[in-house]
Image (cartoon, rainbow, N blue to C red):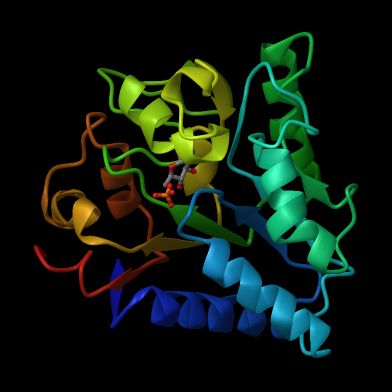
Length: 242
Ligand code: GLP
């Protein structure tokens, strides 16, 4: 695990954008895994700016989002599909067909999860998986628990995760769906490279435990210790307890 220390969230985004640009220059047909949340918004801004400046081409890229809420559709402003359209897909040359997000309104969530796994395999697997970190140690929506499911699956969200996502639902945790679908840690660990972006002092204890502590289902991010090509890019606040 490589830890890259940055001064602040802008520097985290700058370094992450360099990693994405480097990959796309070497491999224009790269397959990306993409996160949502507040952390990657600055990164998506940078990627959109570089695309507008003619420096980044997404025309052959395929992407897979980590997770999506169950029960809301792509037109709902709180859905991760609408987030991706807003912050990235509508601003670069990556069409709906290339940017895959789980369908929160699929009639059979289990079948939707299986379909997503097949799509990732058909794309040749994920070259670069970009991740955010939940303050409770979740990755995607793999919540701390006694056991974890390896592949893409349906999950009941912890109240802490609903509260963390309230900002995308008018500030009211009760408006955040109770369930979601998420790639499993096994799906995430199959990616060839992983980039974890972390900012903010509230995540400092989780970052320290993830790097120094035991691999445990009670801290899903600790499973990243098992992968050979992980880079954690964090700002000074997030790194303050390492
Ligand atoms: C959300 C998402 C995760 C995201 C994480 C961190 O609940 N499901 O994929 O990485 O929590 O979010 P933030 O960057 O807003 O702290």
